[in-house]
Every structure is written in structure tokens, then in C-alpha cells.
Amino acid sequence: MHQFAGYDNAIALKRDDAEAYYNSGSKLKDLKRFDDALASFDKAIALRPDYAEAYNSRGIVLANLERFDDSLAGFDKAIALKQDYAEAYNNRGVVLQDLKRLDDALASFDQAIALKPDNAWAYNNRGVALQDLKRFDAALASFDQAIALKPDYAEAYYNRGIVLQGLKSFLDALASFDKAIELRPDYTEAHNNRGVLLQDAMRFDEALASFDKAIALTPNYAEAYNNQSYCFLQMGRFEQGWRLHEWRKKLAEPVGNRSFPQPLWLGREDISSKTLFVHWEQGLGDTIQFCRYGKLLTARGVTVVMSVQEPLYRLLRQMSPDIQIINHDEVPSAFDYHCPLMSLPLALGTTLETIPSEQRYIFADEQLRKAWDVRLPPKTKPRIGVVWSGSTKHKNDHNRSIDLLTLAPVFSADAHWISLQNELRRGDFALLQELHPLVSYGVELKDFSDTAAVIDLLDLVITVDTSIAHLAGAMGKQVWILLPYNSDWRWLTERNDSPWYPSARLFRQADVGSWGNVIARVHGALYDFIQSRS
Image 1 (cartoon, rainbow, N blue to C red):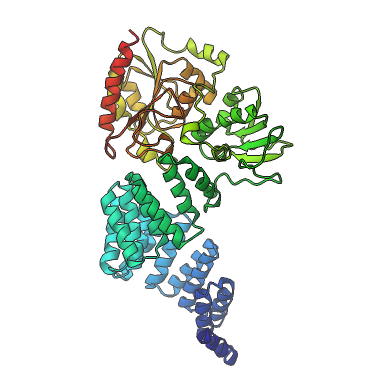
Image 2 (cartoon, rainbow, N blue to C red):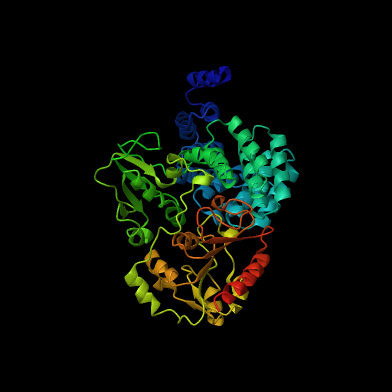
């Protein structure tokens, strides 16, 4: 602070000293007094319009103020004044990443490296851009180069670990996270991602310990608490899991965190004879899985108003005459309490033993059912519905979805095969023409009411972990769910059944990425299934 005061004195003595303003701005930037720093850099530039370093530092401050377009203009000006300014190219790349202009960011990092080949920071940032572009091998090489130039570069080891984790190289990823932590023991993010990695490897106790370490370093670290909640839930330790799951509301992008003048209900108050507004959150499958709690509440004398996503609105209106279903963006005119949908298990004290596992709580519309019945193949042999991939926007899609060609061997079983697939991918269209046993209705399934009507007419549904798995289970239909090695928390571990859906049978990968063994087991089970119906 004494040194900083010296710069103030220099400015007071010499009001036209651009360097003094620049140095003052640099100190203010380090103190995170960004508005004051910006004013100092502006004064330095006013006194010396060709001051490239001041434009660069001004760009950094503007980025911290999340004024990204202005920040980019600052770096562009610095480069125009000093064309070999490697640091400005590097900083420019970081802002372009924030603006999601990934190809431009990559080009900027490449220019920084061309100007200064020993720039470890530019190699690290380049690796992050390549990772965002899903060019994982190139990203890995860039992080390796950053580490070669700067062997104590903890952030590069951390980023390297994230890429290796995505590539399912668990041991190498763990070694990278461990090295990052060795270099920087207080590296909270590395402890957290180490926990996620260990959970992926189903080393749950070690994962919990890593999350604990991250939380000890940063006591309000919502992401670590939220990750730990899923670990507890996957282990079946619901009491701890549901409680920690409330931290999802404090994430950088909060989930289930709507606020209203009426109080939040988490089970403490007696709300019999009261009206509870239950609002949807997260995915369609989550709504299908947890809407069942509406019936438990009405049985306790609670008036339930539940908002659901548009594709589910028509279907769930038939769930119960005692539950008022409203659309996703509606709010009831009057209610006493509110609760996000996925906080209901906490509010109602759900344990592994008390999961409300009603055989069937969602029903198809009878008129739609009749309309679809005449369109499906005749029941001369079993009708089997199939889904091989989920939404490409899902963060775990690469892990849970199966290529249609990989699944194709099951279609040799003697059945009427009905595609329930809503989103077709590149290559699916051509392959569907070749797979004659598979009938696809595609866009004709307008919403989940149509899908439910078709499912009600089937003998079996075979699906990866998508909303269709939940819908078939909620309808009490026999459903075979194909799961990756480390599946989503709700399917628990080492079980071939689900306490959430009594009609479900789980087929799990024995090893990471090994769908071949899953398909072989499904094919064998199909033979028995079809024989039992002959």
C-alpha cells in the first residue's frame, strides 16, 4: 500500500506523466479496483495516445468488468500500435473465448505463439480453446507444450486433466490433477474435478474426500457441494444427498432457484389445507420422474399446482384430477408456498426404502391410443420400441447415447421394431432406409402425449438413458435401459433393477465405453422375451 501511495504522489507532482498514471492503474488493477484502474489508464492514454501497454492493460480491466466488446477493442488498438505485441494477442484470445468466437480465439493464440514461441500461457489458453472446439488430442498436445515450457504450471496440469477425463483416460487424468494439487495445494477447482473424476471411476469414498477438501478450502463452493450431492445420491445415501442438492440453487448458473413473495417449502411446515406451487426445473426426464410427488402431497390434504414444460403439458394434465397442471411459464394467481420439483424428495424425507414407486402413475390419452393403434404394425409378433440416443445438447450425451449402427444387431430379433427416436443424427436417415425391420414415425410424435400413446401399445421399450426411459417406467411398461459404465445417479450402482420404476431392467456397461457387451446381453434377453410370448 505504501508503494501505491508513491504513485499517487508522483501523479500529484506531475499531472502530465502518462507512466505514473499507467503504474497507478496497474496497482489499482491488482487491487481489483477496476473502475478506478480504468480511469487511470484512460488518463495515461489521453496523455500518450500511442501507449500500447496502457491499451492492453485497459483491455484486461474491461474484461474483468465483463465489457468484452470494449475490451477487445482495447487489445486491437494495442496490437495496431505494436504489431509484435504477443501478450496483447494472448489477452485478445481470452476475450474472444468469452465471446464464444473460438476459431478467432485460436488464431489469436497462434499469433501470440508465433511471436513468442516460449509463451507457456498462450499454449495453455490455446489448449482451452481447442478443448472447447472438441479437438481434444490437439488440446492435450498444447497443454503438454505449456508444461514443457513451464514445468510448475499448475493450471496447465489441471486443464490437461480435464481433457484426459473427457477422453476417459482416468489414471492419466488423476495423475494430472494430483500434480496440479502438488504444485498448488490450495487449488480448489483441481480438488473438485478430482472428485468428479473419482466418482466417474466409481471410487465414491475417495471422491467424497476430494469434495470435502475443496469445500474446506472454499467453504461456500456451491459446485463442490452440488457434485458431492450426486455422489451421495448415487451411493443411495439420500438423506445427505437431497440436503446437499439444495446447493444447486447457488451455482454460477443456478437451478431450481425461482423466488416468489410466498415462502419456500422444504418440509418443515404443516401445509395440509394449503396450496403449494410446484415449479419444474432441469430436464424432461426429471419432471417425469418427480411429478409423482404431487400425488403424495394431495394425499396429505395439500392443493397442488404444478408447472411443467410445454412438451409434457398435455400428457401430465391426465396424471390426476386432484393436481392442477399449468404450463412452463405460468404462475398460479394464488398459493401459500412454493417448492421446486426436485426439492420435493428432501421436503418429503425420501430414503432409498421410501421411494414412492407406484407401478404406474402416467396414463396415455385413450383417443390418441386408438388413433395410433391402427397405424402400428399388426400384433402378429411383439411390438418393441427403441431409442438409441438423446439430445445432443445434454452434457453427458457422448457417454449415454449409442450409434444406431452399434445397436443394429438387436433388430434381427423377430419383432415389430418401432423407433421412438425424436432427434435423428447425421447418418441415421440413410441407415433407417437400410434397417427394414425398424419403422420410424419421427416428427409425427408431436409431444409426449403421442409418445405415451405409442408406448402404451408396445410390449417392450429398449432405450438409452433419456426421458423415454422415465416415461416408459412411469407408465409401468416393461423397459430395458442401456447404461454407461458410470451411469447417472438415479440408477444407483451394481443393480439391474430400479427402485424408481418397478418395470425397469438395467443393462450396464462392464467397462468404460463397452457397448458391445451390453448389446450382446440385450440380444440374448430378447430371445427369451420373444419365446415367452410365442
